[in-house]
Amino acid sequence: MNRDEYDQMFRLEDEHWWFAARRNLILRAVRSIPAEPVLPRRFLDVGCGTGGTLARLAPSGEVVGLDMEPLALTYCRRRGLRNLVQGSATSLPFRDAVFSGVLALDVLEHLPEDSACVREIARVLAPGGVVYVTVPAYRSLWSSHDVALMHQRRYVAGEVRRLLEGEGLEIVRLSYTVSLFFPPVWLIRTLRRRLRPGKPAKADVALTPPWLNGVLRRVLDIESRIALRFRLPFGVTVFAAARKPVRTPPAK
Image 1 (cartoon, rainbow, N blue to C red):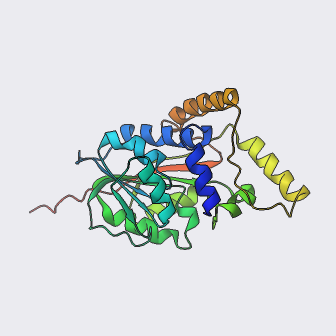
Image 2: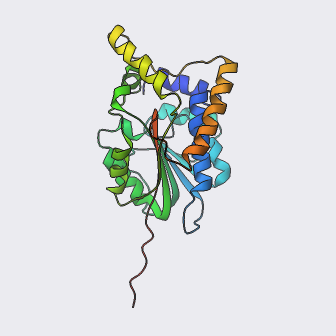
Image 3: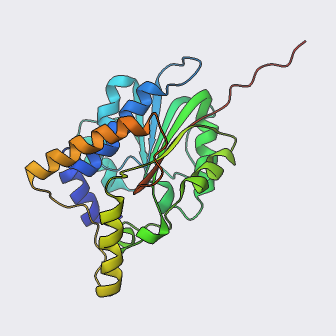
């Protein structure tokens, strides 16, 4: 992302309904889909951005944030986070099997080789550990928002399944989220492409009136609870949780 997008993320991440909905979904997922067997709780946030989710996750165990962009880590430090590493998502600077949980939240869509990142995540996960993933859904939603955030692609749920299972991970939960807002988002972005094809690239996330922000947060908070129990058939985002298998020793 460019500098302006990082600045805006840092300003909005704590309260804005979009970031809050994703954060609440992931924090609930960490509690409801833990590592098995029970492991020391050590989490890696790959592409941690400005640190909003990482800061909320800190009470759950040891947390490590990784990002390629020094500016993102600067913002993380402003939140009081210290266990930070500058590095590549496709070449993680950690030993094998050292994390009980890995977060990859809106990261894979930025990478030319998303499978390389998943391969690295599978490597650093301990057996029984879980990766929690979000990615933007549906190519039909492609817009100037994706251009501004330097996305390479958008996904459908089946592609996320194949990506994770292709690196030996076992799907525990796979669902679309932000489902209620899919129809208006699709309509708005379709009209923008047709009526304003030369619109400058700019992320859609912006200040929302407090009353509306509160309503949207509550609606998506309810939806996140549903998505962790049932697969929603469509949405603006794909969410997945996948576990690294525990290999049982061969019988003697």
